[in-house]
Image (cartoon, rainbow, N blue to C red):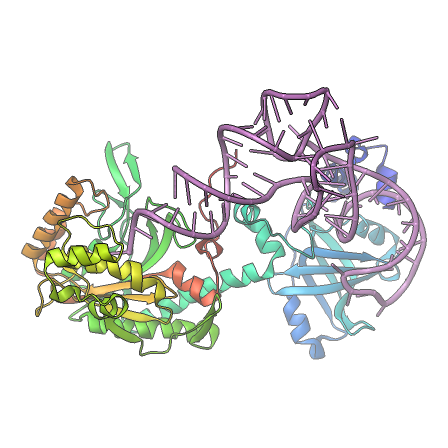
Length: 497
RNA sequence: GGGCCACUAGCUCAGGCGGUAGAGCACCGGACUUUUAAUCCGGGUGUCGCGGGUUCGAGUCCCGCGUGGCUCACCA
């Protein structure tokens, strides 16, 4: 532009033909005119969306707005600018007559990406677009780097995750997803708070990582000179609180698992765990159905969503089926009513790799994961998990090999996990011992012994129902996001180079 | 960790059998006082992910590495 022509000889960078250098030269030009291109506070009277929504009242009125320039259309002695704030986009109309020589010339130094504050009058253009005819403006921040392309946006997945600010800037649906995420989390709190649940915070750093079958991250505390684990679940601390007398608690927070990364797994993720004294897993079924349906209704206005082409309806009641029934249906094998050797043979016939001493319950669980889970699209409550894979759940009174445990499966994946909590300290000690034995056999995801937790149970924990739900996965379902990385603002990435 | 695929301009992408690197947007210069993917005239701005090799010559073929994606394995 004209300005740059005048600057041509003054700034080495301008001769490089490099956009970054050009823009840096403009920073110097602003400063040489006594203007800080990284301006100070700007008082806004309106946001972009308000001007559009309240146009009938605002037409002809003076407003002050601010935002990032996303498009520039110069027409000689007049220019159009599109600016974007958190509420949306609005067009600015800048006329030489209205701004005068000096301001209009300064406007010519603005680039796409710069942040600007303007004052002007609301009007509608000939073509019908609600706009602001500006009478003055201030540069609030200079963008040194060019924005990704306006039409195709930013597609490169690597860049989108690494430089999420760019993704948010140019891909509007990404902002929408993360706003929804926040609303979902608020709705979860609303639902539980309004039912008398107390939100608590338990430690992220554990001396013993328990409450789930997962490999933990290990860290070190210098002053105490001790190894610590980042928590893999909030379960054992929350149940200690039930022992302590809180009757309804929940914790919504970050969990860390040192495991593989996939479209459904991020090393750190958000879970909600809820515990209710004097309740059982049937209460947790009702609670989970109610919670998820409430959240969907609150943030989307409906319990029906489309997820990756599948129509899913979260309206209760959800299908309830025992794992044994579900497995029988899919595989024709009744794992509850056969001998251990038959179970192993049947599993192998199905193509599962199980060891000779695998129990009926373990075989059933394997068959479930292989043949049932991925096929369940509608939210489904799968009940009565085998005891071998449920070290913290209460044993069924009518079948000591099964527990009062269920998982909610939806879109082929686990969404929630719940049970009537095991509150018999002796049984708990035996379960931990069995886990430790597994661990010694090389299963580094088996539980560690948590003696203090057993001690807590020895003081007496009321019968309790507990439930844990993967918040990221719920957000994925409600925002139709194919990857967990699409619902985590800054997913873990390997550093570049 | 295995398999497959991708990596070329700021962004989105094209580059047949190895022969001086291309488009659109963005950007730079010029024109234009209600445009809106503004338009018109002029300009290509590049470590072809990185490092080797083959070749007279490599974006292209071969080997290794890096990052990412999909998938399998793993993963209540």
